[in-house]
Image (cartoon, rainbow, N blue to C red; front, side, top):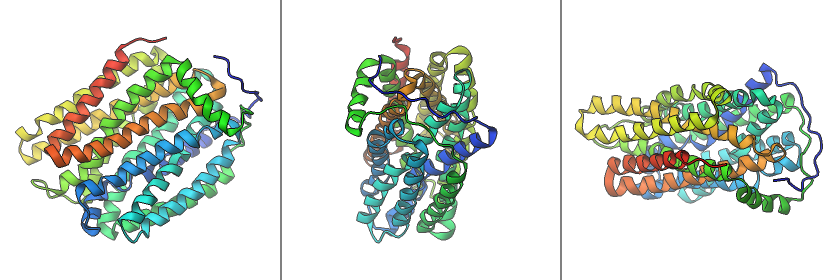
Length: 400
């Protein structure tokens, strides 16, 4: 489809190793804001005297805010200088994290969680920047490298927040997070190049063009559906893990829940490798394998009740490594597909993909909390298994 954009030649600074590292670090620190709360939910529930269903709204609203931010704010990256957008969002994210840390009660905390999600979308302004700067034949590798930073931020944020919450309290987690974003903003202001816009459309037309992109490209729809289903299972697991481990028979604290992020981080390290495989063999080949790995890993956790406590924890760690590997490799491959559809609309294409992904995340947090309350951990694992199996079925269907 030919867009109606009035195109201007974008700036093309060299994507040096230092700039790649800065982009990867920026995505990791900003997206981490979405996940700091998850290992602390057991402690938060007790401190705020909230039920599991009530506390489940914290990750749900954070993910919903992220989805809304992607839909409403990410398209601006095609219209304005991405550098300015990134710096402005980072500043507001810092304020939202401070509001979270000093929230006097659950109501304010829920509003702050929504704001954190809305402006943590700065991470998804950085990823298209890397795709724009990279030459076409290395785009999968470049996106994979930057996404490693994002994925490590997602997973290691749980480790850090779990440890900090146990040592200093959950409020310290968000105050420290705000400080990290403030420092990042200063570094980004010095290191980011400027980006010429690739569209002259006014904002309302940019939003309308999202629907046109969705209708025009079956590959975009397939990628969005599959990644959304994987995200549902991913979020259902991570948003309930701390509550499950806090209860019998484990009785583990927030640090233990966060430590499972280390297993997930090992899977995330495969992101650049997945990008290189997508460049070499095509992303469809990578996607079918990755979705299958995720589905099998979730299904394996259905056997946890048959094992002693130590065996359950070992299986939990192995499954975490497996499904994180599958989910992250799928995301890299889907982005490789999407970024190649219409280069002049990369921010909007990414917005569509990631909006669907984080709608899945939001639903996963909500449905995971309901499943845990109604059917226990087995209900959560079954939900995640069905969702990832659905993603595999979507990917097995070829589209043009």
